[in-house]
Image (cartoon, rainbow, N blue to C red; front, side, top):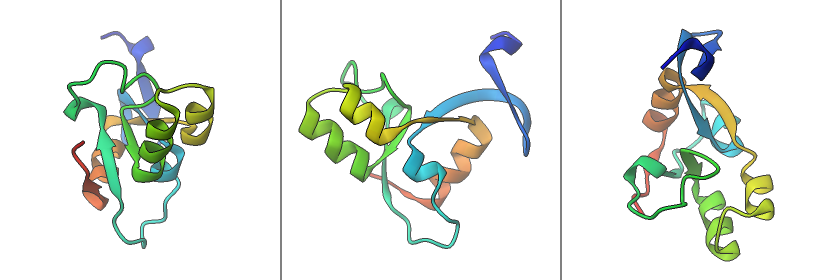
Length: 98
């Protein structure tokens, strides 16, 4: 992977990146853990088209829409984070394993 496929995180430096729904990225650190879903845990093709990790609310939207269409993608509004930040997000929450 070359540097064009990395993100320069202000906390962790130059790292590989992941896409995470806005709800997990924007949650405060003093919240109660919430359920998240990880595309890497999936065996279903197409589930990771918008993001690598998304919250239960986004998963409910995805299921109601049937696919990562414009409505579901707008609701998730995925953000780019470095893989170290992703690990921190996952550590604060609960993997829902679909």
